[in-house]
Image (cartoon, rainbow, N blue to C red; front, side, top):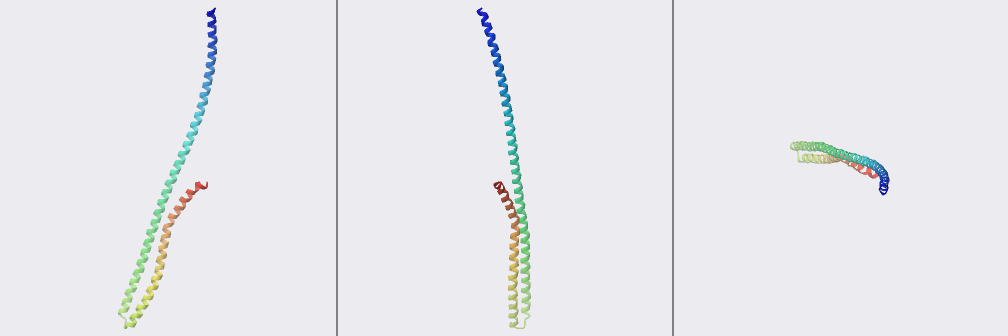
Length: 174
């Protein structure tokens, strides 16, 4: 009989053990499923964050590229304006000096045909007054042209600086 008791105790223990294993298996399966769901959610959130960061990085790169192109374009435009303005200013100086040289030649011719020293002095005085007035008038015109060239040439650069400054201040204001 002792042997029978052992057999029956073993059967009870096996059933309890099987039940415990089943409960343990069910708990592990639920835990694995819940963990899998949490991991899937974490991976999805991480993927979304990486995509957002990548998009932001690409957008920043595009903005920097655009700003660099705009800065280059502004410098090129400024250079073009400066070259054209310098050319016009050079032509104006040349025209002024050419007119002055022509006037000096005419004065010299007039002085050579003068009949008296008084006439020579009168020709020279008239020429000096006229030449001084022209120097003042033309000097003012040339000065104004130079200021206009400098102002016009700086305008594209100033506009680009304003754009960059506005973009830099935009995140601070938001």
